[in-house]
Length: 379
Image 1 (cartoon, rainbow, N blue to C red):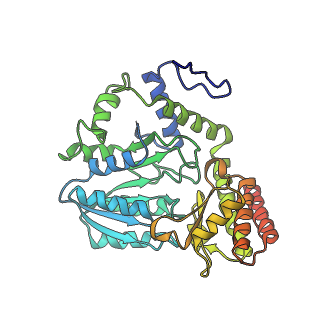
Image 2: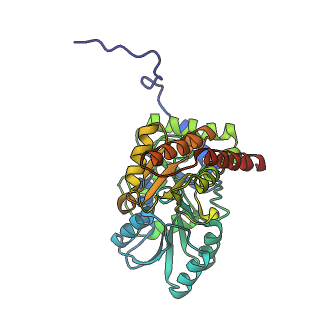
């Protein structure tokens, strides 16, 4: 048998002391503070699609009416889950070039007073837009419906006031602006949401999707005994990610993400070729910027050429049907960095130039640098 020799430079990931219930609960409390909520939080042992589906299947009952707001691919996913729960789904779709307006939500609720559940994505990294949750939350709360928010791409990148905004079910993940793990995620559940879930006979029980199981076996027991073996490495990584944001200062982290978005948008405006896919600055997500490729070029070719120039930059094509026309520049987490943003613009310039496009890389770098500095100085 060949002996296995550990790499002395690698982090120690094995033979860790057990993650006990008290430590698990402390991590949940740190995340709740980051989410600005006093509601119960449940740290689920999987990627954020797990608690998102769990929230819908727990709170939506057959025969109910739900409003699903679509500003990107995740909203489309929610619609499928809502229908499979037996709900009638009213849909608001906003162009991926912008955000949904609170007035649209108010009109939909007035037209269908029986709507009792609203699903919304805060920021869509895939399409680069963000929605005005505070204003939408006020409209939904006045109507009396539950509001579920996907805040995976927004937490740590833009303000998120779960309780103040009236969000009943809020889901976050660690893998974007927090620069943490993808294998664990958290849902906050308001008292109103728990009441709805408890009254839903179709809510999952004895299931990985069951929020009620977590409540009864973990929360109601005073969080004294874990219901199963935790995903230890992921939970510890999530704690470190939250601690790092706290050490930096949440406001500083938000400013860094805003600066990155402003810099990319300003640089592209003078680079020549691509233009911002999201039209208005106020609708642009701080976590990622999407660009519309020049009509004469395929976005896939532009991205390939850019990565050939610098394979380290966080540049990719849009997903699915958007792949031919959309370029996506990610600037979340550690990529919300002045140097990374400038390198991304330089790689795009090199890729466009290789494909025969005329670009002004120097002007783009200058505009991006000034935009970054203005945002940070204002902070």
